Length: 310
Figure 1 (cartoon, rainbow, N blue to C red):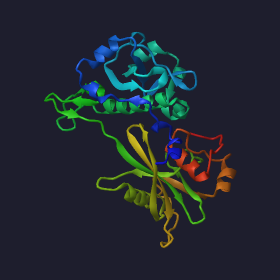
Figure 2: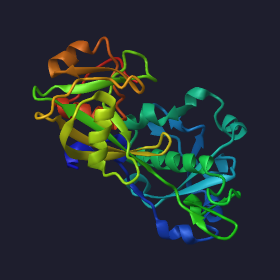
Figure 3: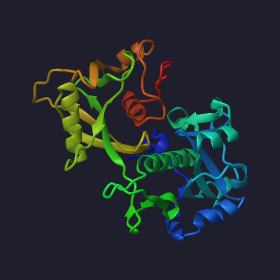
Figure 4: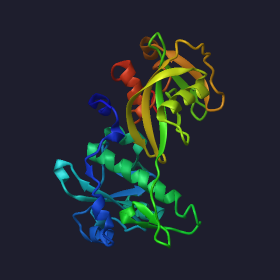
């Protein structure tokens, strides 16, 4: 991944020392909560408190109702808060309403991720991914018994002491380019009909990333591609993905017919740069926080100034 492409990935940025060694201290979260120099990132229903338009509201523990689930994120590497410990607090409806009753005070990472500072983008991404895992895995997958958070929130522990670690689902996302240097965009069945993005899909067990690119593209579009080239990756905690970005070219030696699968993809269109520019008033493109946007603008050659986003 080049430094230039990395700069296009808002959720791959970080200024955080995850400080994994401190997670072993049994009283870590109690100690941090008792220290008012600790910064707390409140989370509720997948959203975080916003300060203005482009910053998270981080609070001292004394300002936040202590919840059942706390997550030690690490220590800030940002110059303005170097070495400060940061904890995410996953709040109940009641506690969130006490802290900030106005829904406009809470922010969705999809919508604000690209506007946040490097520290705040990394904090929100890590906290959301970890919180989503805890909320969806309260029981042991082997025994069915309840589990408890451990290691500062980075594991769940069974009654026999066995630790269960978070999982991340790998998914590929592909900019498909033909011999005329056009890019292929598709409209998903779950979206409004004017929304278009790159093709993507989860990596299956026993499958390499490159093979997943070739398979997913053919399954969703009927197009055979070759030479998948890795561009970069970005966490996508909705709820637990790692998006791995590629460019791939249409195989010139295989006759392919553009065919939406009719299940996930309902429409497919090739766009030259001029055609994409001309279509900006009628179609919606991926939001600025997504890796899809980064790959699209990488192919386009610069920022795309569109008004319809999602």
